[in-house]
Image 1 (cartoon, helix red, strand yellow):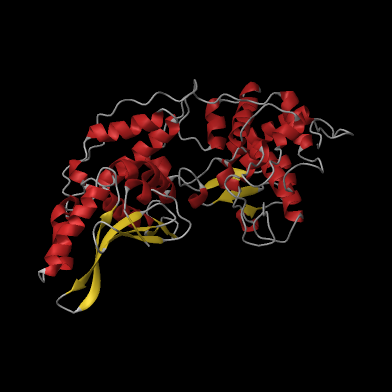
Image 2: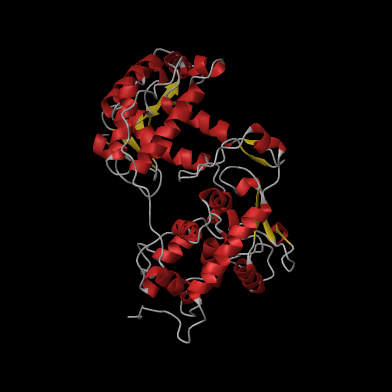
Length: 445
């Protein structure tokens, strides 16, 4: 295909890789991918080999390789090739002399942080276990803005502009992107090979404008809502699987984070039918990367047994026939709020089904903590069950000392069990006896 290559052409959306040759400069062409990447190149006759060859010029960027700049470079290279120059080698030397770009630094950084290493528990996991999230922010927000630049040319003003642009639509997104950029440039400015390759002596991620404070969530379910939710989760018409419904109940009664109990296996539980049942959560599933030993009160034991009775899989809250399947990280949230899709009709969520005000799975932890506080349990004792190293309430829980972190491995099970048993009693009082008619406010159209 031959056309005049223009900016509109290289930014056109295509369904499959498309190659377009330029009518103005013979041999000059652009290759466009479905992902939106447009790469300029030159096809020419190599006088040294007598064969047809090609050389890549660069990737389209409105602030870097524009169409006009790429065409001019192609014309220059075509002339040099006609004189017998080894233009492939010349382009490589030019690229090396110009140094790496931020895009290249991002690529190298992702490779470095996604490389597996042996962790404290002996398992091989990525250096940065949240690297996929970091990669997402860098790809979406950083590459389009400064990807074409040399790392050494990036100033804190460019970083601030990226942050401020994102903050207009998402405070959380601005914070997370800033954190991702901080990690990236810290990697690029490390003394040694990195600082030489990227020509960085310090990170430009400093002295940035403050991002406005996010409003803390305060949603707590009242007694009526707790009763509606608890018995409503038993309704046969509930728009979610039984495993998800039990998971929602378990988050309320156990005070654990969803990420900590979703992957729980039968082998994680000790003494389920005894007097001291405990769920042992391996550190790789815990936010603070430390093992949690969470006592299970009577309601938690009932829920675990119900979940186990649904299947023979090792994963307790297993959603599928696959014995190793684990509930998706968004499964509980999607179940509460409903699923939306471009081609699929919207499915109502549990909140709409039960006629409740909006809340999140994490609000259930806050609700449980609030119930415990209302019946007189101290903030320090509640913090232990929430796995908080420090609490902002009246009774501040000091962060663990070296002795507490390393040498004293006791998880104070007796104190945690007393709190969770008290929560069990309070929840049983609130939910009362099973109603004859289960809650349901939604009517199918």
